[in-house]
Image 1 (cartoon, rainbow, N blue to C red):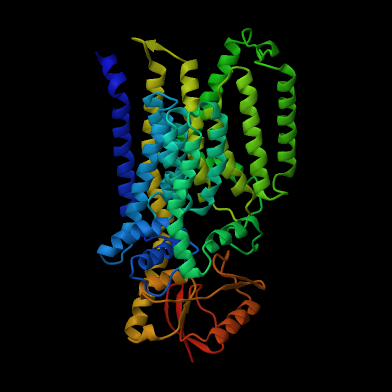
Image 2: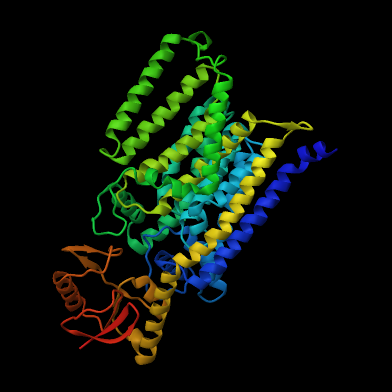
Length: 554
C-alpha cells in the first residue's frame, strides 16, 4: 500500500515540500533586503519600472534589460513607487525557477533525487545571497531553466512544446542579455535528438512566435532611442571588448571561477563530491576485474568513421584549449558546441545515450566560457552555472548511494540516510548564511541611509531643488530618493574615466583636478560626492552624512 502511494504521490509530496522551503527562503530574503536596502543596480531597474508605468521621474537607464522592470511596472500602475514590488517579483521568479528545475530533473531522476538537486540549487551560497534582492540574474536563470525544460519536452515528448520554448527563451534574454547564450544548449539539445522530433517544422513555428515577444520591445527602443537594437549592441560590444583595470571587477584571470569554486559549491555540495569520490574508488576496487574498455566490435556502423570522429574531437579539444582566452569568446563557444555534438555522435555509436548529460554540460560550459573570458568578473556571475552544476551533483548522489546501496524492505536505506543528512546540512547552512548575508550587507544599509539622509536634507534646505541641476556619484540611488533626473558624475582614477565601480577612494591630486574640470564643464548647482570629502575650486561642502558630502556651487 505504501509502495503504491509513493509511486503515485511522491513526486507531488516532494514538489510541495520544495515550494514550502524555497517560498520561505524567498520571504525571508525579501524581508531582509527591505531592511538592508538593495544595491545600486536595483535603483536603475526601479527607474525603468517607473518609466514603463507612466510615472517616470526624469531618470532611466534603458540599456538595462526590460523584463523585470516591466513586471514591476504593472504594480506601479496601480499603486505608488516603492522598492518592495521588485524584490517580491524577484523572489517569486526564484521560486518558479526552482519548480521548473525540479520538473526538469524529474525527467531523469526519482522524485527524491530531483528534490535534492533542486534544493542544492535553491540553497547554494550565491543563490541565497542574490535571491530576492532586485537584481535580474536569478530571474533570468529561472526563466532560462523553463526555456531549456520546454525544449527538452519538445524533443522528448511533443514538438508543440517548441511553441513555448523559444518565446520563454526570448523572455530570459529580455531579463538578462547574456542569456542569449542559451542558444547553444538549446540547439545542442535539438541536434542531439533530431531524429526523435516528430514535426521539425514546429521549431520554426516556435522561433516565429518568439518574435511576437521581442517586436514590442524593439518598437519601444526605436521610439525612445532611435535604434531598436541599440541596447543589445551595447551589451555585446562591451562583453567582447576590454575594460579598464581600475574598475573594481576587472580581473583577467581565466581561472577565477575555478579558484573560487569551493566557495560557490557550499558544504553540502562538497560533502557530495567527497562521498562520490569515495564511492567511485570503492566501485573501481570491487569491480577492477570486471571493468572493460569500450570495444570497437560494439560500434554501430562504420568503425573507421567513428575513429575519425574521435580524432576530430581530440583535435577540436586541443584547438579549444590552446585558443581559450586568446580569441573572441564566441569562437570558443562554437568550438565547444561542436565538441559536444561530436561526443554525442560517438557515444550513440557505442549504444550510449548521453544527450541529457551533454545538454547540462553544454549549459554549464556555455556560461563558464563567456564569464571566464570576459575581463569583468564578479562572484554573482557564477549564478548562471549553478543549475547545471546542481544536476551533476544530483547525478553524483544517485551514483554514490547506488554503490553503497543497503536494502531494507526493498528500499535503498543508504539513499534515505544520506538524503536526510544533506537536507539537514542545507537547512542549517541556509540559516547560517542568512546571518552572514545580513552582516556583510550592513555597509550597504549604512550607505543607503546616508544617501537617503543627504537627499532629505537637500529637499528641506532647498525646496526648489527640482528646478536645479544636480549631479551625483551612484546617480540612480539619488534620483530615486529625489524623484528627479540626476546627472552622471564619472569616477576619475589614474588618468582613467569610468562611470561606476572604482576600486577605492585613493584619489590623487590629478584625480581631484579631473573632478574639478568635470564640475566646471557640467556646472551643476549641487553635487553629491560619495567618497568622503575633498576640496574643489568652485564648490564648497555644505553638509556631510558619513561618506556622502553635498557640494554647492559657490
